[in-house]
Length: 325
Image (cartoon, rainbow, N blue to C red):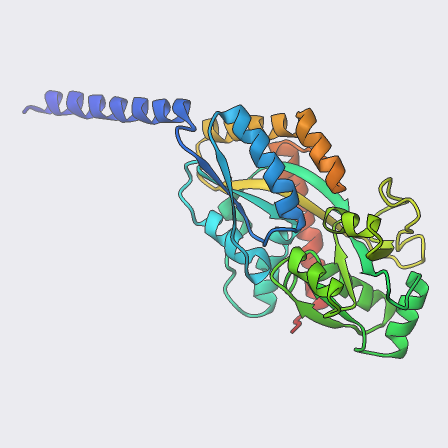
């Protein structure tokens, strides 16, 4: 075969490969999509992920199967998606701990389980301030009573979390640092197990997103003492913010969808549109409202900036917290 023929053959093969990739992207999705929730059932990521997955599936005309992959404060599931094939068939429903864990690994002197650069933000779905919750039969009726006991009895009050440096741990470390108090940290595998631990008397308090606790609050089993947001919450209008109480701390537990870096733009765009449709779907909006949260949607570009800004802010918080057990 002469040189001209070889060039023509190579060009034909390249064109065929390009057309094949384009057709594959146009056909996406041609099978079920897996949505990894890196926490056990019952937590915010799961509460948001399941109705969102159902709405996205209706738009994509393929199942979106939720898989709970808990461990390491969410790091195991996040790392799984960060290292997955960039084909759009593995998506992640993450919480705000995704911007904390890589920095925490560095503080602890170990290689990060994943880096943010390994993931592409698709959409933010929710953003709720964390709420300080205790059992309804606890001796603390107000935040003032709670923190007075913590200061007078260092280490006696225990609090549960979804894991070291997770979205339930960081705000409590903020509270401890701002008030000069000491409370004992008890990590669980997720918000659901931590709240069950509190209900059963294993721990005294948790800091969690409203969606994880509002049902138990309304049922009279839990009491909310304060929250890490601004002003009053529509869902819990009688609960003051920490800033209102003179404690200068704030924390937002947000949820968002990510895919592995390198995912083709056409696939990313289809997932962006599916996420947008889910956030506007009346049935899904109602499910979320009943669960105690609401959509605060951001599309990819706005969400990407939000993630980068939050990562910088949380890096400073983690460095201030330092090493924890």
